[in-house]
Image 1 (cartoon, helix red, strand yellow):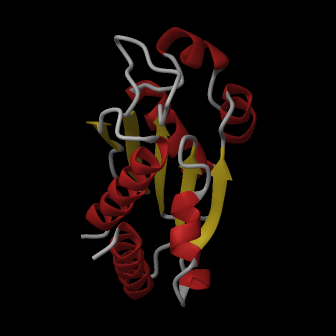
Image 2 (cartoon, rainbow, N blue to C red; image 1 turned 60 degrees about the vertical axis):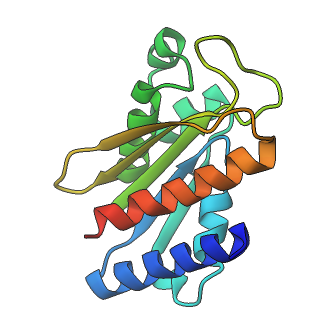
Length: 164
């Protein structure tokens, strides 16, 4: 199955699960630029699940749209567990959704450092009444589109995990 087929299958599973549970989803995306929202809204029935999506590519957007303290970003960097968690929690607080997922990372080809290399992506998922979960993936310098595709798949897996 192609990456597109995997993404479609996972997105369809998320839509089906959320519809059956009566749950809505919100996304807060940086390096994926709305690809998770796009994957979800490509599935029939998504209007009953997707509340909204935030594309917060810049640090200013993360602060303005999600309420993230600029000091948190300055202290930890935009690509960090702290910011991923704040993005997920901010999106949940600023939506009508039950579940949020956030993605912040370095897709490349530039922008990486020794401590934060290309391919590093932080994810967080929040659910009303539950603790926010975080995961870090180091996909490696596998190419911009491959990092973004892998990040979409991971984000959809996190949403699925929250609906079990």
